[in-house]
Length: 57
Image (cartoon, rainbow, N blue to C red; front, top):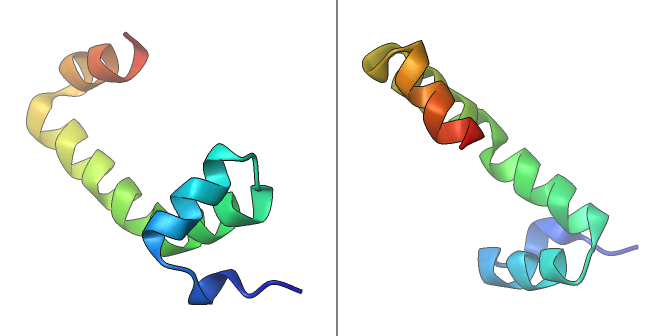
């Protein structure tokens, strides 16, 4: 079993590019909460219309 917690961010990105799903899970575990927090703050600051445009365009 690979322990993805020991890999650097760069190594995880390289594995993601190769389609490694477990690497995706580790990246999500590391950054998911902070990304979601950033998204919510941006949503409030920019307004729903502007952030929706940036996400879906």
